[in-house]
Image 1 (cartoon, one colour):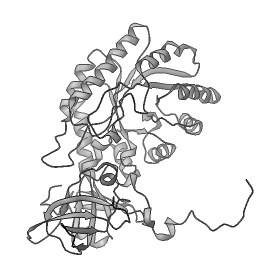
Image 2 (cartoon, helix red, strand yellow; image 1 turned 90 degrees about the horizontal axis):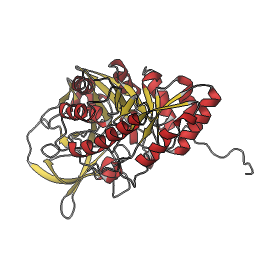
Image 3 (cartoon, one colour; image 1 turned 30 degrees about the horizontal axis):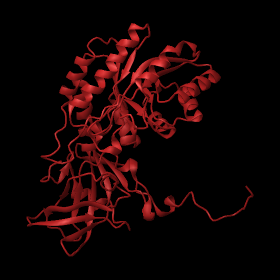
Image 4 (spheres, rainbow, N blue to C red; image 1 turned 135 degrees about the horizontal axis):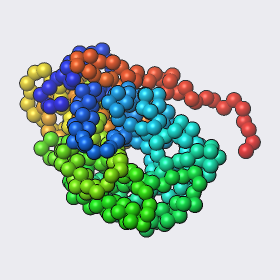
Length: 417
């Protein structure tokens, strides 16, 4: 969506905001479809699976879109498993990642028949064996290796360095494969690596995937079977126009084809942000303009509990006033109503002058927006709307105050510990 547009996927945003109270999220179904099709086209001819990273945006309507286009799921919790299945993603097209899988989660995933587990520790590998044995099934597993590569992204979304909590060293994974024959109910026949998110250069990908492929070849030479290699996700998107230069899917695919030219198995991709980030906007209204010493504060009705990324990562999101009349440019700190100084979407941002009641669009909000939202300051969760060729459908209604407090109660019975 460009700064001059007042429509999104054929829907007039002013008309939409007149029907729904702001703030709310709006997602373009066509933008998501285009990203899926582009990735599928780039990898055409390769034995590959695309498993969407559910954590990026877990609304079941978004997951249903993925299912309709043959995209599986990369999950990290029991809740994400339930969402994926409810949306129609087959269990056989789901991979289970994450460092903290519990026996309950592993058991539930095995019971429905998820395709494979990306294993991140020897303790988890042993737990997988025990739970699979109890159920009398064989669990397919991939060793998540940590290639110790700096992804060149924000430190809080970098996952492939030795000091990060994810994966194990190649040395440890080598020991796993050497002992794999002793596991009666786990088939360790895959590798997995994911070095981080919002990566805008092929350099770290080349280094990390090169290390994965070298290790795979070593394993094969030692007599082990490696039938799948999960290359993770991480492809960056454009949050800041004129600044971010995302990697074209075709160039990424060309690198993958080059690195894994000798691999005859299945390649697994785990895109999350790449498929949905630019497909979403957060619509918000100006509450008031508050004059400050150096510049004015533009106080909007969205807050850090609705979109956490700017507070958590100092992340840039384009903020576009959707004015219908021409105005001069002003500079603002764009802030929300939450009682935290960190409740700030932008500092000293130049934009067209705004007034109370004006509608603004916060771009790049389709990923890690609603999925990270909370009810901090007792602010109910906002609505989500799916847009598709001039139509719209509410895919999450705005939470009521009663729903927000539904799980709470005054103490009725006191028990001794």
